[in-house]
Length: 134
Image (cartoon, rainbow, N blue to C red):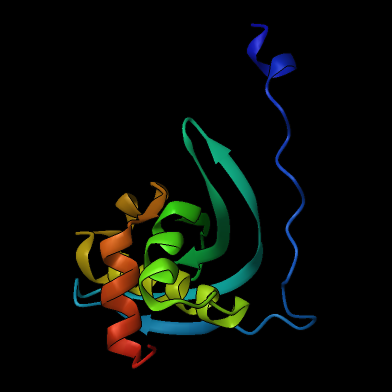
């Protein structure tokens, strides 16, 4: 009962484009997803903190859900420490978007997209290698 008073509201999203563009991705799961980028904000959960990237996702063009891609600071720090540089904001966004695509490919159906996508250090490394970012 008291949880709703004690829980803090998330910060508002920032970084969304002025004009939203619907994009489409055909997942290896066989589903075709439409999505919009809604923006990002800092997050802190349990012992993790980082950036939450929020996408509005639909698989049927009728209903949509907000999908959060959580990119932890520790996952980024691991890569940055090994490569001796800080990732640009556009590179961090690319990591989130590629992690979303990976979820589209790996999750068996749209109903499973309501769970957060967590990006680990190994994910950061694999995504940046695939993008040719060193």
